[in-house]
Structures are given as C-alpha cells and as structure tokens.
Amino acid sequence: MIVDGIDMRPGNAEYPLNQWYVAAWSHELEPGRSIARDICDVPLAIYRSEAGTAHAVFNRCPHRGMMLTSATGRIEGDTIRCGYHGIRFAADGHCVEVPSGGAVPAKMCVRSFPVVEKWKWLWVWMGDAKRADPALIPDHEYLGLENSTLHSEPGIHLTVKANYLMPLENLVDATHITYLHHGLIDSGNVATTPYELKVDGTRVGSVRKFENEVLPPMLCAVMGLKGNRVNRTLTLTAFANNLCEIRQDFVEVDRLDEPPGRINLIVSITPTRRAETAHFALFATSFENKHPGRFDDLRKLLMEDVVVLEEIQALEERLGREQAPEVSIKADECNIRSRRVIAEMVRRERAAAQPAGATT
Image (cartoon, rainbow, N blue to C red; front, top):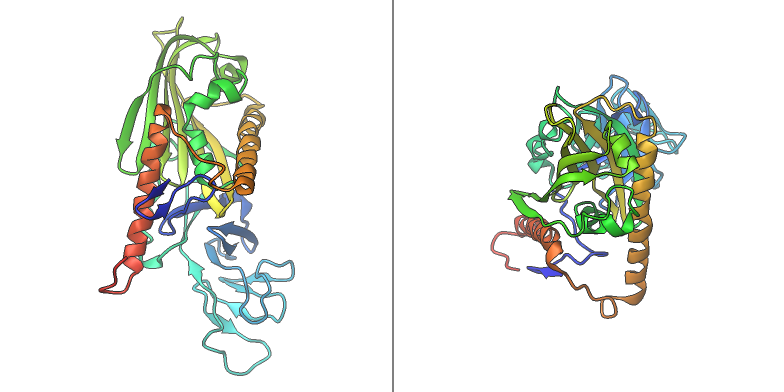
C-alpha cells in the first residue's frame, strides 16, 4: 500500500522520525552506566549521568569509529568517554576532551537526541530536536501509568524480526486472536464479534462488547477472576505509530453489583531497523495483580505472534512484492486508517525538510 508516495506496505513500511520511541525501561540504566540500542536504524548510546540524568547520543566515536558503549568506555559526570583513545563527549554531543592534545577538530562531535524519562520508560526523539515536544508522548494518565487508581509495573522486553507495521497491526487486530492463540485468550468468539471503529487524532481503535462470556483459564488468572463468566468491553487502540493498548473493562456476571475491573496491556512499538522492532510490554490494572505467572504468560502469548510475524517478514523478502500481494478485508479497517495517519506524519516531515520553493 502506497499512500501519497509513502511506502506503507507491511514488511517495508516507512516510519516517522519526528516521533518519541521507547528505548528502555528506566531500571535498565543505572547512574554511571550506558546501554546500546538501535532506533530507526540509528545506533544510540543511552547513558545515565552520575547525577542520574538520562542522555542519548550517536553510538560511534568519529575519531576511529568505536562504539561509545564499548566495555572500555565510561561515564564521567555528564559526559561519555570513548574507550579507544579516550576522547570525551558532552551530553549535547560536543567534544570536551582529546587526551592526546592538539586542536579539537570542528567535526569531532556526535549527534545528541532528546530524552524524556516518563513513568518507568525512557523515550527518545529521533527527528528534528526543535520539534521534540514531550506533550506528543502518549497520555500516560489515560493509559493508567500515571493514574493513582491503577497499578502498573515494568514488564517484558521482546525483539521481533519484522518491520514495525506488522506487530503494530497485529496487536490491534482482534480477529487473529481466535485462530492464532489456540484459546489462550478467548473462547472462539472474538473473530466473529462486530466492532465499532474509534478515531481520535492519531489514535485509531476498535471496540467490541461481550455479554455473559466464558473466558479461558489464562485470561481468568491474569484478570484476577473468581469465576469464568464476564461482561466485558474489549478496546484495541493503535497510538500511531509508537504504542498499542489492549484495554478490557469487565465485571463478573455473578458479581454485577461490584465495581467493574480494568486490565490494560500496553505494548510499545519501537522500530529498531527496517525489519526489526522492539516491544516493551506491561499491564496496568484496577487491582493489584499478584498472579505470579503473569509475565511468563504474556511472553508465551506474544511469542506466538513473534513466530508468525517473523515468518511473514522472511517470506515477503524472499518472494518480493509481485509474488506477495496484500489483499485487505473489512476487519482491516482500523489498520488501514492507522497507515494513513502514519503516512501523513511522514509526508509532513518530508515537506518540512524541503528547501523553500521546492516541489515534490
């Protein structure tokens, strides 16, 4: 699918750079330490100063090309030192020391990237730093991450060897639940249940309602149910293009006088390379989720998706577009809308980057 000249075909879809992406859990980055992460085909050195502030810079020393996150590199105050020849860079990317002496070349610098630490995530802005508005990060209160009525905690980190559009669309595609997940999270009824489309800016989702529904054991355990029959509303939302939310509002049918419960599965979508995506997934719940296997169950569930998506990516790359056409159906409406939203984001970036008077 090509939208206004933007390639939005699964397996090769373009992504906007003027966007916040989750790079890590906060707890992964201790003071005075660094980690290497790729986002949008860019190698990043993400480090926390000795005072506790998180920073991100291009992960390559321009002197002789060593990664700044190498084992011999180190963090000193607010700066990062290359472990090869000791050249040191400030958080803004400027070189502040060449131990061997001499004038510092003007090109001896690395690109820096805006970082926002919000809730227990580290968000990095990959585009024009002047446009890095923290208000563009998905609403954490809405998601239940900064909401005193919900409980949330860091979950799991997964890598999917597939273009980001595939896992994004998979997570908000309810119809695959019945067939791919073998009864783990439905009783065979989700695929045929009608939905209502919801569009709010860059949020595109679907809403399905169920009455007196029988839920399988895994879902009952994660939702903390005493029985196995509920009335529930299932809302799947893509925050184009960096996050998905699977929200379930429910009440047990034999406890209708009790307040409804809520469980949100929140999964970040971070394109690391053209054909690779990182997930940081967690639950936000209206109850204290003490199910000991909740994250093991989540990993098991998501890995079923990962296996399929990686197979699809590999097959599409082998066959090429002519032998691997895409035919959409009515249930793909939400995903097609999301593609158009993302394509518009990319189009605006291109337009803003053009010199005055240039035409496409």
